[in-house]
Image (cartoon, rainbow, N blue to C red):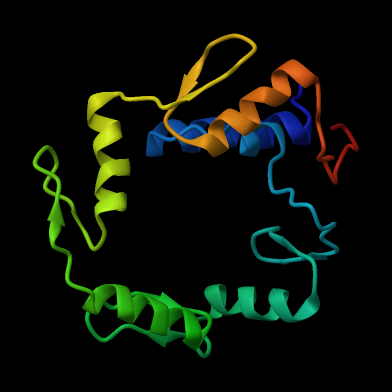
Length: 160
């Protein structure tokens, strides 16, 4: 039996998240959906945007046209402003180093978030079932399993 387009997208998302080691519940339940209905679709990769100008900028990722490139690391950006933000992060001294994985951060709060991945510390608890999470945003998404809230709809099949 042939899988539906939604099932194929979900399967693809699951596979990608396993490879990266990150599971985002929202993306699994709502692949490629945002609060804004997206009408413009990229002919190369199928990505949707909510306005034509964003689609044009997205298209540059495929053509390489007018991309701004970081002289230090070679990474390319669609918007010059994004390159400037990247450059500031490159220039910021990263004085907070994790002793477990040797990653460096420019702020102590970022280091503390990283350290939770090593210690398994979970500060956010569900009042309904007691399940714990490392980030508040993950708790908010989880709480929808108790309320039944499904605020996003698939643009292909209409399911929420």
